[in-house]
Figure 1 (cartoon, rainbow, N blue to C red):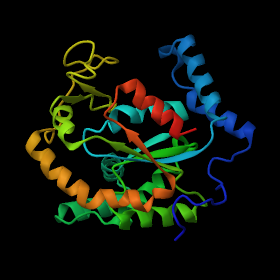
Figure 2 (cartoon, helix red, strand yellow; figure 1 turned 90 degrees about the vertical axis):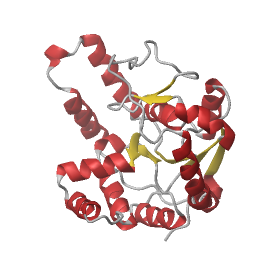
Figure 3 (tube, one colour; figure 1 turned 30 degrees about the vertical axis):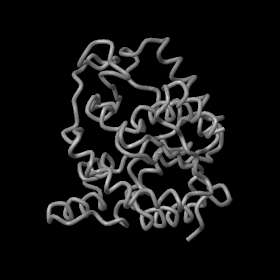
Figure 4 (cartoon, rainbow, N blue to C red; figure 1 turned 30 degrees about the horizontal axis):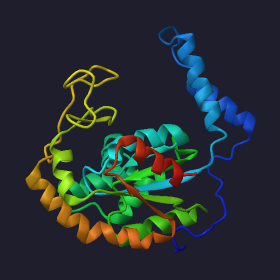
Length: 267
């Protein structure tokens, strides 16, 4: 396996001729135009054209629950034209789509077994082939162990690419409880809110859609202690594995400062 974060040749992902890429963009945009305003259509077209000039980035977000990954991930995704890969969502999507790997995952889950690392890496390998991931991706929730990181590196090396940056969201344990217990999310989009630090405009409602927000069942103090024990035991060694391309983010700072740190790290 290739060592993580070392220079490797740029892969061939997303290297279609400009004319074909432009046609692909147009074809993705063309929908039922009667439901889309001209202004919205032009903005989306411009956004996709802007994405063509963005450099490729393959990122991993690492941090304990409540460290702010869910808040910053959509912003990073939009700024750098990346796709967001959450392993739980990908597994559910693969199962729903009845792909070969999805059916294998379903069988494992129904038997009470853990989904194997090789299976998860295979699903990630399939996911990064999508047009949305042309410029790269953000991995959130994987890898959680060094073994998983090594398998991920091997899969990417076969494609001629590598992890470019690992953002380590650092927050003291004692601060996390307040963050966790006040967290609410919009399930469909993944937008994250907090009753104290980032409240929605209307309590209990998503700012964009107005739909109800929900609280994850494991967002409580007791579950947090269990999750933190597992996090420190398993996930922290992943940071040592990726130390050559890791950037520490002091995530216990005002949001504007956190965003500035991320911007510097991703230059």
